[in-house]
Amino acid sequence: MPITQSCENSSSNLSVSTNFGPAAAIDPIPAPEEQGTGIHSSVRHLHPFGIASYIFVLTGGYRTQTRSFAVVGLAAKSLHVFGKPNFACEWVPDSTTSDSPSIFGSARKIWPDWGYGRVYTVVVVHCYFKSSVGENGSGGRLILHAGEKGSATPASKITALVEAPGSYSPSQFLPKYDYLYCGSSLFGDVNPQRLREWIAYHAWLFGPRSHFVLHDAGGARSKGVRSVLEPWVRSGRVTVQDFREQARFDGYYHNQFLVVNDCLFRYKHAANWTFFFDVDEYVHVPGPSTLGSVLNELGQKYSQIIFKQTPMGHNVCIDSNRTNLSRQWGFEKLVFINVQKSVRLDRKYVLRAPLADSAGVHLSENVRGKSLYSRGQISYFHFHNTITEHQENCREFVKVPKNRTSKVWLNKIPYLYDDKLSTLADEVKQFELQTIGPVTL
Image (cartoon, rainbow, N blue to C red; front, top):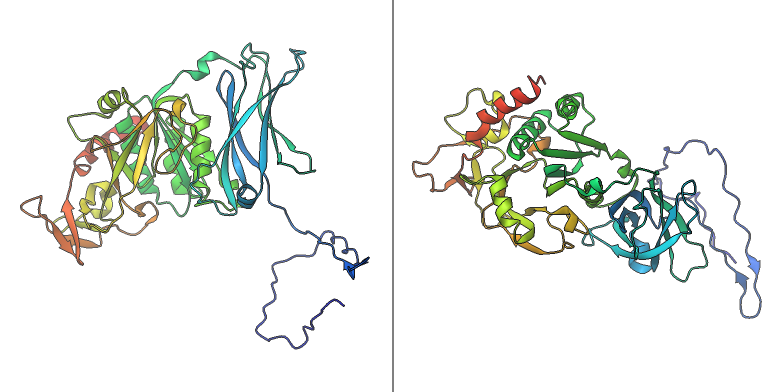
């Protein structure tokens, strides 16, 4: 007999959700239990409801060379950890320009998120064909077959990329920029002023042959943030991708790994070097070297350069600098490094994108060639969480020591004075004014 339970005497603390509206249609009533045979008293059925996990959620498909492609997406982590998902690649020539049959290639799957995936994990599928496909400009489609190995259910046939006739060009593999920035998910209540400072500084540092790709995961919703981004977008220096739909799929940290991998392959051949770091982090090259001179030298031996963090005090300022604080930029007034030994130092990186088969948050684990952990040729200052702070940053004040190599203690935390970025503020402000004109927030 089925076991039932009456709710009449249930606890009064039981809450009833009122978030559900009237159903447009009621799901079919589950079939009743059937009489069993032999030793079985009854035949039990399982009745699935709701939305199933997806074996693949397509984000983008990209040609990486004349006979290779990359398909980036999400997939249900449980299916890929406990199941046996299987992928295959097919090139279908455009029927209006060719009567050639489909060509099948091999597929290689990469999980680039280090196991951090939640309900969904990031999957990059590389497709390889024995010879060039579509190189004659005839056009075609890349089909990704996604299924469960050994399953009776037919594999899904996903159109990952469509190349219109005449759209292929060898020039798409030539770099347009010296440097490209692939930004992580931009989310939360972003402070427009802090974002303004970050863009102006890095546009100045990276130079005119650079481009910045930002991914809006909800952080560009305010009028202030849009007013910061619009002039840079109009000038051609910044691209903003609308990635807000990622919220439908529960992945790690606003699908950060998905965003950086999509950017890597979407702009794989766009620049000589591609940077990965966050918008509360400022890349720095100590003089007299320049970013170009350092990368030109290191690039002769290395495909990836990983640089270390300098953690800045996010609320510690100079005691004698209490006037006009609101008019000073964040990196102009936050000039103390947190040198506490227990602070975990993260790293970020720059790489030759054509040599990378996936991207990570702190480094790529799938890059051809050597990687270098920089010994100071490049580093970054990290102003942790200041990008979403709207109150005045300066809330603690200390004096600059006469000996600038001496530590300053505050609340049992040691700091070192460092004004390397602060001394650049006036030059960066002048650059911003000359490049996009006055900014009003």
